[in-house]
Picture 1 (cartoon, one colour):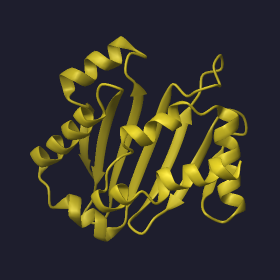
Picture 2 (spheres, one colour):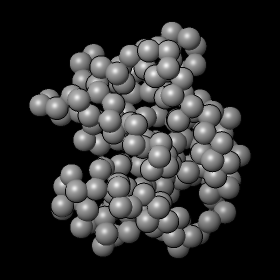
Picture 3 (tube, rainbow, N blue to C red):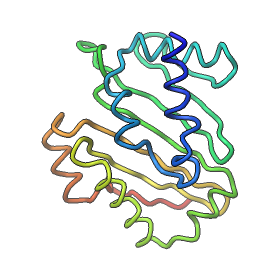
Picture 4 (tube, rainbow, N blue to C red):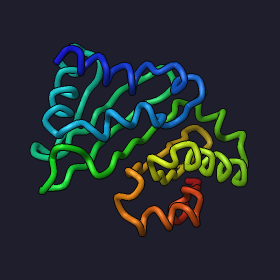
Length: 175
């Protein structure tokens, strides 16, 4: 179990690319997440909390959300499992709630720049994953939400993502 705890901690929390580029999980990072059972994920989030590295929230049955604070953001990660298949998630949701300094980096981008950023994430994760990205911002806080699916899981999702280049509905919101 300790090996799994360290792997999840390293993947999500201290990945230097993640920290310096403010990006979503890479394909290499997403792969172990999509092969992790609900029980293994639960053991990891509970274990990370027990050693003081993270916190978690749960509905008590089939959802465990990892909450981790980095130097630039709070990272919130939730794999979704179906009632008929708890051996691997069907979707991975990641939200990054940037601190004011990191938010300023994204607030320098205009709407077209953000759509380009969203399209680059979509392209980067292909062909293994389909990713929808949403950017929600104010003058002091930027939140990135990512919905990641294994490519081929749902043809409609894959087709819609392709036409929208990873932008789901109103993918850039200001509040």
